[in-house]
Length: 230
Ligand SMILES: Nc1ncnc2c1ncn2[C@@H]1O[C@H](COP(=O)(O)OP(=O)(O)OP(=O)(O)O)[C@@H](O)[C@H]1O
Ligand SMILES: [Mg+2]
Image (cartoon, rainbow, N blue to C red; front, side, top):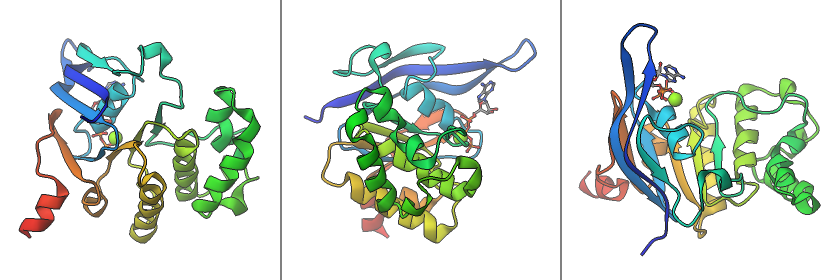
C-alpha cells in the first residue's frame, strides 16, 4: 500500500470578511496524498486552491478538522526537506543571489557541504545556470518562477506543493518547465500536487482534483481514463 504523506479529514477554513459574516473558503473536505502521487488541482480564481495548499503544507491551520502527516511526525518537524512549496507570488529572497536562493533549504537543514553543487546542477537542468549570480530583482517574472521551482526540488522532498508555478510563463515555456519537473521526479517517490489554470498541464498528472466555491472534489476520473474515452 502507498505510504500516506498527508491526510486531511473534514478540514474547513473560514476567514472573517470584515463584517459579522464569516467567509468559508474551504468547505469541509477530506483528501489524502500518497508517495509518488501526481495530482492536478484546478478551479476558478478564488475557489480556494491556494488556501487548501497552505493547509496541506502546514503553512496555515484549518478552522475545523485535522491535517496529519503520517510517518512525517508532528507539524513542528515539517522541515523543508520533507515538504516544499512553490508560492504563487514572488518568494525569492531579494538580498540573495539565484544560486543562494536555491541552496537556502539545504543550508537551513545543515547540509551546506553540497548545497552549491546541487543547486548549480538544478539550475543547469532548468537552463538557468547563466543567471546563478544575479539578484531576484534582475530576473523576469518567469525566470523567478523557474528559480522558485528549482529551489523546491533541491532537498529531494517527499512532497512538492506547487501553486501555479507556470502562471507567468508563455504556454510553450510552461510546458517545457513541467517536462523538466516531471523528468526530475520520474521514478522517485516524490509526490506532486500542482494547482494550475492550464488544463494541458493538468492533463499531464495522473489524478485530477478540482475546487469550486471552496468545495473540493477528489474523485474525478484520472487523466488516463479521460484520454481513453476521448
Ligand atoms: N488571508 C485571507 N484573509 C481573508 N480572505 C482570504 C485570505 N486568503 C484568501 N482569502 C479568500 O479566500 C478565497 C480563496 O482564495 P484562494 O487564494 O485560496 O483562491 P485560489 O483558488 O487560489 O485563486 P487563484 O486561482 O486566483 O489563485 C478568496 O475569496 C480570497 O479572497
Ligand atoms: Mg491561488
